Amino acid sequence: MDDLDRKIVTILQQDSQVSMAALSDRIGLSLSACHRRVKLLESAGVIRNYAAQIDRAAVGLDVQVFIEVKLNSQRREDLEAFEKAVALMPEILECHMITGEFDFLMRVCVRSPADYEALYRSRLSTIPAVSQMKTMLSLWTNKEFRGFHLG
Amino acid sequence: MDDLDRKIVTILQQDSQVSMAALSDRIGLSLSACHRRVKLLESAGVIRNYAAQIDRAAVGLDVQVFIEVKLNSQRREDLEAFEKAVALMPEILECHMITGEFDFLMRVCVRSPADYEALYRSRLSTIPAVSQMKTMLSLWTNKEFRGFHLG
DNA sequence: CTTGAAACTCACATGAC
DNA sequence: GTCATGTGAGTTTCAAG
Image (cartoon, rainbow over all chains, first blue to last red; front, side, top):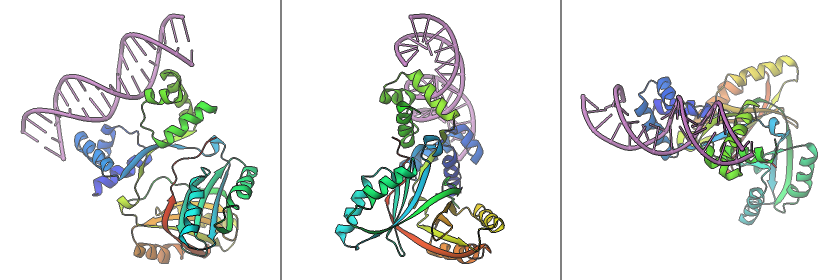
């Protein structure tokens, strides 16, 4: 991971459909050298995959919520039960174990407040391992994720 | 956005480099019909862009932190000052205005605890509009974002 | 919506410097 | 690392049903 690799990754994070020729131009490398680096970044696992990025509103996911979760205990069985429940819910887009007052932070997207209420009432709050939850509704997004900042 | 469009989007969120032929096969449509739908989804803004997804650890961003932020007030000048400061910090990957005790939730990635300390001490806590912050260090990620769940 | 064909771009491998 | 080159694959468009 030298400076050229970071440039490549930065560009590909914004637009993975850029042609090798254009990419090599922008980083000041020959086409074949650039191509070789990209393939190396892929096989090294630096570049995981290529994905289409979707407009959340355009697909009707109008409600985005962050949820802090506290478990009954840190015992293995509670952790595993919670993780398993999270894995089974596709509306939970991400889930992080965190330090602080709560144990986990999750991001959830659903179509409507009613859908969130249903999810919350009948599928989240019923997880036995969960003792407490705090919902933070995302009112609007000031800054969206557009790739990691390198360097 | 019918069912076929949702199928297309779901596949492209996981792998945008799938060939049109393979994509059309998987959704059960002819190549040209499938191609037309993809282009429509792009021009309609449903598909925003195509991006390489990077392994955070592989690029040395070992520290991921969520930060809740409370402002001094909800006055326009405080909000704008905060947003402006956020926009200028590339380490802040996302920032959402939220309901609840705090006003904003941010995600930050840096290379080391020392880097976070420096960011926190000299660039975050010095924003005049900010009255309080709460740092939640991400210990590990149970579920990673891999695209929205449609349908 | 379908099939099929033509034109074009680019990826990829190769060999040479 | 740099060029130059050729083949195959995939994209894109178009005509016709």
